[in-house]
Image (cartoon, rainbow, N blue to C red):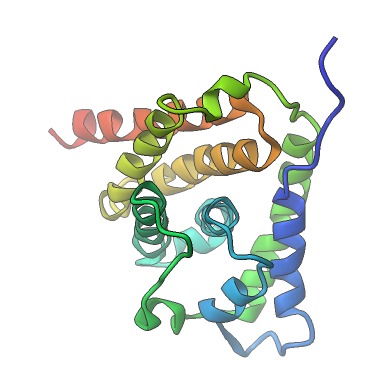
Length: 199
């Protein structure tokens, strides 16, 4: 029998993002800095999850958003692999603004799918989180994130890889090795698919 479901932090991250938007006029803009600062602790998996949720949301349809969110995930992942204690993101990125109305609507639409995934998480296959196995899924996600600018020309590709990264980061937070491997594997398929489509 498997262990009972565990909280991944995915719904908590989504709730914090929505809370950061609450009370603001829909026509107003919100800086990414405000969303990042709403994340308690600002751990690497939480920030990857934050930008993966933005990548999988309808906001990724905004021109340039897929590149922005994907390359941000790549920057976070690179710093994690290099062993940094805290995440550094440039001010030019953190000062980018999103429409409060569009961001709020997009995050609201994610509540159902995120809850569905979270209810199915278990603490499984913990060997995935031990060295030397832990680095392989991270490298697959990094490789997919670096392909973000190419996703701008292929409809739905950004959303697809964003969904894979949501699985990856939610699995990390819940210590569910099966979901981590599934998310990283799906993300790793994207660069191959892009190469086949573009060549």
